[in-house]
Length: 293
Length: 340
Image (tube, rainbow over all chains, first blue to last red):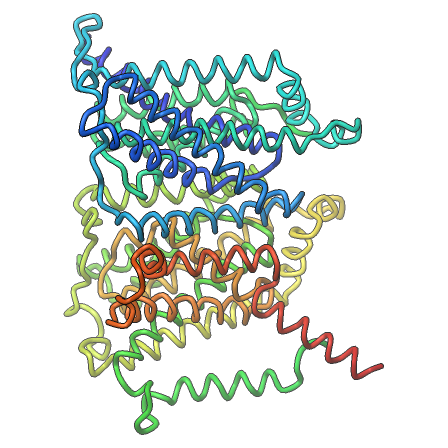
């Protein structure tokens, strides 16, 4: 039973990390039709800025200091995302394939710049001591850092939902995901919604980057790799443009992956891809996705 | 006609020169070092062309093309090392396995289109990469890959003095790939591929099974990629997970976009230049004069991805059509000026 709880919660923690990346990907795709390969570099930029802030505070941080570093990392990644959107994406309006290609270029350049400056070795992220302790839940010893991942993801989900539901820009974003051209035709400035979505997506990815570097015990330009691919899988399974869908799919994938890895060593990735194939065959639009006209 | 009337004779001359260079007295290509570099470059040129068939000619943005290349490398290597069959038969089996795999993966992923298709092929490709890294049944050697047992392949491919045979094999594989893709894209199926890229709905309205044609393009390009994988196994001497990495497919995309899609020769030239450039750039950054450049600028430049990534962004934004596109644009301008 303890093992069951431990694996379940670890899976949810992993799912939380996937969600932080997938939420931005899903909204950006849903609203603008952009497949954002640069999302991994938003994550890395956030991780490095967060690392820089945290290491100013010594080899070990308190929890508020860590949270501050995480938020600054997120903001930096959000601003970087905004810069990429303004500089490159908007100039390729409606050229979806070219937009995807440009983001591939951005991810290469960012990876090369960070690799050239800092090298590709892992650097220890200064984390609070509390992260290394364990919490007793139903007899299982849960590593404390999982709590941060899960609560951050839930906060982000709620924040996202509130923004989409109660603000004007959220209304425009929701309308834009449904039918962008109609919103445009009504004379509403959709461009502002694009920028908002890029900033928010970048922010979530940057926060995710700091957490991923805690999870993988350090920062390097290569940490984003597998998370971006899992982000894509989550978005496809959850349904493009649906944030709750991404949340559901992220949790599902995190849990399934951990259980598969426990009961059939190393088969986690494989099972996830099988799940992807099954979802595509039965429900090509994803769990909570709408069929596009 | 945009095609230069001497382009085909020129192609013949260039191919003949490339083929004869290793035995034509003393020239750079008579040295094993450059022969090896060029052999690898020819393989990449051919691979870029197989990717062009998908991305340029049929409009399928796949991010999992590396899987079929790696299937060629691994299946051949495993069959040879376990002394099941000779290189020749192993290569044919690997091509068949790769085509079959493409048939299955393609059937599932072609249920989606456009950007979703890109994501799904990426996921399948990465799954393949992970499986190769895991060393199931002790077959794939895990993260280190497997070394090809040199005693079990024809002996003219072994040792440094025989590098020219690998060079010729790679050149032949590239030429064969070019011929097959030329034949496919000029055939009536090739017209349907182009129509699918330009207007899928229209093809559907004409009563053609669009899924089947897309699957055909997917399987042909996978089979050819496996063929080039067979040759890569000879050139590299081992099968390693890096051949299945998503980075391989991204490199192919860069090669096709930089060289120019849909012109065939553009992709090949793009692949050859890219491959030679990444090899040479690493040599260049080892030199002493390079160390005088401050680290904050020298660090990124020493990574080939930096320069290539910037160039790639530039081409996508300002010169779509790449190298061959720019050439045709210039020719068009010259022709219209002459006719005025």
